[in-house]
Length: 432
Figure 1 (cartoon, one colour):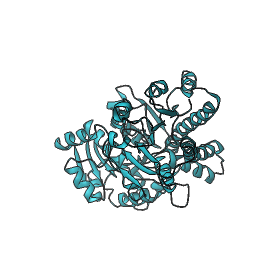
Figure 2: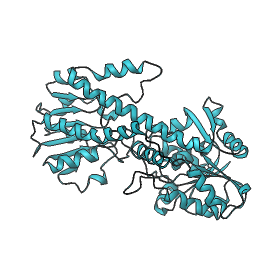
Figure 3: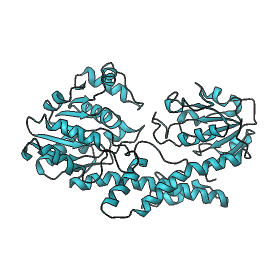
Figure 4: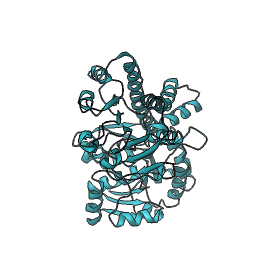
């Protein structure tokens, strides 16, 4: 099939490349000419394991193209995916849909034959209805279908998640588009992927409900970890004990910092905002948002206690600053709360992340990037394990530094407390 992906951010680029790898002809469109030129040269602007290799392979095979000509790309395609950003609107908790609607207006000018317009961006309930209204202003209703096809890609695992999905959700209100969308995904369905066909509005809500529930699981285990710390219980025993219940499951029950990234923070806010428009109070999700917001403050209080309330002039190291491992994504990472706070308190901060230095931290006083774990750790008073990169899981602190005076605060519970303490270091972790 001939596909057009509008937006070469995380969702659009990963999905487009993977669709081309299934044998489709894909045009990835973006108004950012510099980004398009980078992609044409085989350079991927985001960090995602395995993505660069697939870009180069399918671009050479001419199944994958990159363009900034939206009109031409739409005309040449059968299915058009809207993959632009839907960030939280400034001064509000609702999703900013301006990019989605602007793209819909541009698409409406270029419908020359029957097209399926697919929202792959995460959009609130009724967005598809609004897109349909925009398209109808310039086109007859039989010339297009508007479909919701939410993505469920985890950063760092996106290629695998696309190829072996838990489920494929298609929200369509007509049989023609339903049949074509199922045909598009048939290579994955034939390998065992669950296919769910719903109404369009249901598909839109499935995405938000999924992310809100996962955010709730993370927040729940973080709160249980707080109780464990006060009662001498190991939170990992609790996670295993409740996770073995098949009704609950063990995934997303790992205690740690506040959740972050491109999805959970904005999507939990957006579903609350959407519910309020329909006069529904999502009190549970509101509590999750508040608890997660308070999480970084709680961990900062713990750091203050670990350092005996003497943060000024302390040398603090962050190992990892992204919101999770295997991504360069800094959006809503708890490090963006912790590092500025500690800096204002007079701490001297170094950080190392496998994906390099971060522009978000460049202008913060007394914060510097170093290019190795060894440089990051040496002469530190406190080492904070913030992100669970594999690079950090086998660190031998004893061999890295002759000093045993620095303290280790393991926010991901990567290390064995006894092993680290036996090496002569003071060690703290989460919920144990």
